[in-house]
Structure formats: C-alpha cells, structure tokens
Length: 543
Image 1 (spheres, rainbow, N blue to C red):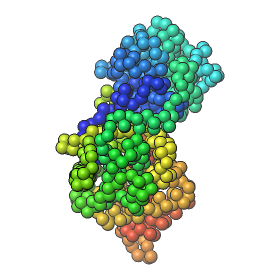
Image 2: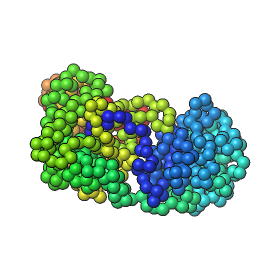
Image 3: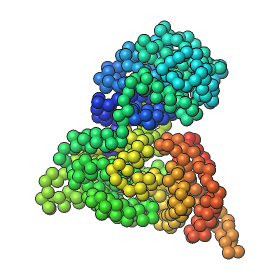
Image 4: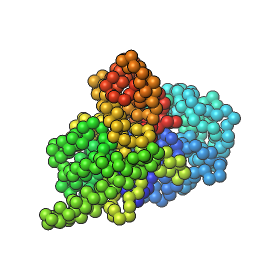
C-alpha cells in the first residue's frame, strides 16, 4: 500500500465517521495497552465505539452526543507531573461515564477523592466481592474473578460516591454516583481474564447508557459508501491494490460506492508470494470487473535492495520506489484518459486500506509520546508533488470487522480469510540482504507452510503462519554428505486484532511434516526452527 502525503491524526475525526442517528460510545484513551480491547468489546455488543484523545473537551463531547463515555486505563500515576488529564466538565454533562483503572483514579481525584501509591501492587488475578446492588453487576452474583493491573489505589471517596465492591487489597474496587451517572472500576473488565467482564460492559451499555444495538456491518457499508460519495463527488480515485485483505476490501467497498470512478493499480515488486500476481488479476480484473492496471516492477525493486540489510531501510527503499512506480502508473492512466478524451481525467483522490491497528502501531496515542515500533506501510508521508487527497474507508475498523465487510461485499474466502501479509512483502521476512536466490528459498518454504496449514485445516484457525529466512547457516547431513545451509524459522501465532499475539501450540506431526518438506524440497535449507515468542515483547513479523 502507498502512504499518505500528510500523516493523518491518530484517530478519525469523530464527525467524519458516524452519524448521530446511531448509539455511540466515546473511549478516552490515556495510553492503556487495552484501549483497543475496550473498543472491540463495545462493538461486539453491536454498539459503535470510537476512541478519541483524552484531552477532548466537554464541549466537543456534548456536540457529538454520545450515549456514554469510557475512560481507559493507562501506565501513568494521576499525581505524576505531566500525567494525562481530562476536562473535568465532562463529569457534569449528565452523560454516563465509566472509569477503568487509571480512568477511575482520575475521575476520583478530579471530583475530590484521594489517590495514593499502594504498597501492595495488584497485578493479575483477583476476586471481587460485591457489597451493594448496582446496574453494572446485575445478574453476576456476589463475587467474581477479575484481572487487576495497578500500583495506585483510591484512598478516599469523592462526595456523592459510595462503594459497591471491594477486593482483598482495595476497599474501593468499584464505586458509583448514580445521581451523576458516574461509575468506576479499579480492575479491567475488558480483558479475557475477567470472565464476566463482557457482561459488565453490556450492563453499562444497555442498563446505564440505554444504547441501541445498531452497529452492524450492513449499516457500516451503507454509511461508508455514502461518505465516500460525498467526499469524492464525480472525481476519480486511485487505489494501490496489494491483494491483501485490507486493500481488497477497500477496493470492493469503493467499487460499490463509485463504480468506474475507481482504478486500482497493482504493483508486482518481486517480493510477493507464489502466484500472487495471477490471483489478484483474476479476482479483481476478471471476476469483479474492477478497473485494474498491472505493473511488473520486480527488477527495479530488487536492484534497489542490493546490499540493503537494515529492516527500516528496506521499508523506506520499498516505500519510496513504490511511490515512484505508482506515480508513473498514475501518469500513464492520466495520459490514456486524455487520449481517449474521457471527462474528469484527473485522479484527485488516493484510497488505501488503513485500519485502526495500522495507525495505533505507528503513532503516539492518547496525547502520550510513544516509541515508534516500526514504520507501517500505510502510515507515513508521500512526496509533496503527489497531490492526492486521502480516502480511507476502513480506517475505524478492526481486522475481524474488515473480514466481515469483505464477506458482505461478496469477496471470496481466499481473499477475505487470507492471513495478513506485510506491505514490503517477503523482504521483511528475509533477515539480511534480499537477493533473487534468497527470495526463491523463502518463497518455496513459505509455499510449503501455507499448503500444509491449509491441508491440515489449521490455516484459517490461526492469525498468521509463515516462514522467515534467517541470516544463519549451520552444518547438516544430507545423503551422507556434510551440508552448510540456511535456516528457516516458522512463525505461527494466534491473535484477535494483531495488537497482541501468542504462539500457537501446533500439533507436533504438522510441524514435523512442514519441517521435513522444507529441508527435503527447498534447495539451500537444512534446518527449521519454531518461534515461540509472544507479542509483546516480540512483534509478529521479525522485521
């Protein structure tokens, strides 16, 4: 995918992504690793959730008219200098507010309570004892297992609040002020380690906020199409189609919205998987009848990657050359339109399949500086001379929601349920220099991984499964002869949205079959390893 000319804001502008006819929950982000999980849990209840910066004003919130507000957790202490703060007028809007962990402490401190460092840090599993009836815990019994992650705790309640539940180390594990519709929890209901957390969130949405279940994929597609039509009018849109889930669904949605105003450009950078180019052309050009321009630029990319070993440099080289190839292809389309005397010959808009996780992993969130993990192929900057306006119809969706949209738009399973593939392609799964020979080795190994995962019915049960070519050679024995060949690492992970991931406990017989086939069928490999690291601290991709 091509990158936008100007880095977009961390989150979509609220007024641009939803109409007030729907129930809306705003999630104020204070930098928690679980903020995205909160948003997902709300959407799983068919209620639209939207993450906004923690410094949003009460006036802005009032204009957006949400049904409820959730304050996320966060890594800071509320009494630290520079800790993220909130507009205290938010608590006087009359809109129900649920504070979680840091959000609870911030709410309490602003309203006159006391927060202090706890000598007994609560991290991990705990038991919540419910002391008083509350809408949040309706139907959940007198105690429940919960998940804690905090070093500070509430020491004194603000006026108007009372306790509804406690834990062994916290007398104020859940509090409420029903007159002002303010609720707060010291634990995390959004994580899977709080077994009844979903019910707590449902109670907040439906018993406290009185939301309607009106967030459906059908409604999203209809509204997204209307937004695209309003944005682009009768102008033309160009999309860099990679064949991955995100750009494919974006292409299908845009084609539904504006038809032949959309032209997709598919660039073969020589870093694709086996038969990738043929599959994309068949599905989109022949089956969907989407206008598609195919560009084979393999030699150009490989020439530029000669001698490059640093992963960030690889990404920048590939991204920069993609821009040049894309620009040239767009100029060719423009020249053809002029030659054919077609109206509205210019391509004013650039579309891409940016998702929430794309943005979150590449920029700081919640107003807090965050370390850049790695540049993302969808987020960065185009040269100023590529004067496009950006169209990102999927920007507020998570990956599983994108798949739902793809199915509803009629895309085949081989596209919708294919595993994520990095924008720079196999280049970032080759550690070290990218050469035609090393690409051949990795492509052959990866083809075996995909075929065996599909044959064993595991391909669609995991988030990603792929091969990585390591810059490591080792001694082996093949046919009674000593070998000194390359090493392939297998990476197989499970995840919900790519923000966190765990390695999959694959059956040994499948791993053995993959390993056996690779060392026997892929010339130049004599060793296969299995990556058993989680994200975090590792990333899913190796580069």
